[in-house]
Length: 128
Image (cartoon, helix red, strand yellow):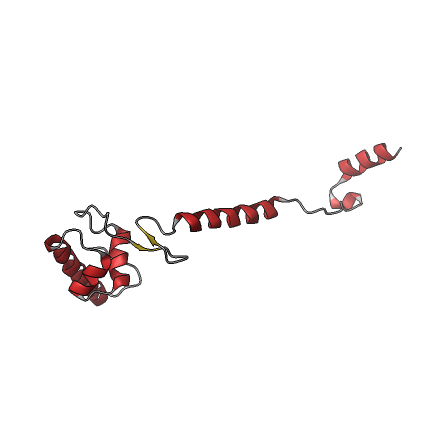
């Protein structure tokens, strides 16, 4: 039995009972879809999808078990996002990192008290 941080022991026990209902249903009805498991057991689709995401139905091949992409809702068989959303998220992330890697132009402070003595000397040499 897995224990999540934010779930009380009584709720964990209820979730485990729901899992056992789904497990037994899948054993008796191999190849059942998430919808069929829901209709046969009364366990919420969201909870069944969580079981699938967690890999708790290891005895089943899983070809017929899918769940929703967390971003767009497309049906997927593994991970959190569908391939389209993965690509879009990667592009968005790449744009953000490209923007943050650009160095802003900032003028160098003048005066030896600012710690740029070497830079100032070089500037003076270039000016001469």
